[in-house]
Length: 70
Image (cartoon, rainbow, N blue to C red; front, side):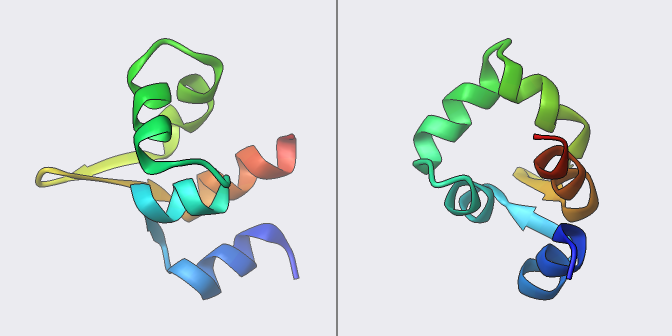
């Protein structure tokens, strides 16, 4: 099972900020702060970002490719 299949089965096509923080073993507020600044992590996960209303989600396929690249 590859990373993308695992993420799709566990979370679906979109991950919430809380789910991504849990996956990366970081606090939600710490991840939110890292994504708001011009940092390496924000550049990697920026293309995965999808805003729906006031909520921010991350595409599972892009998150998987970032995790596989590391």
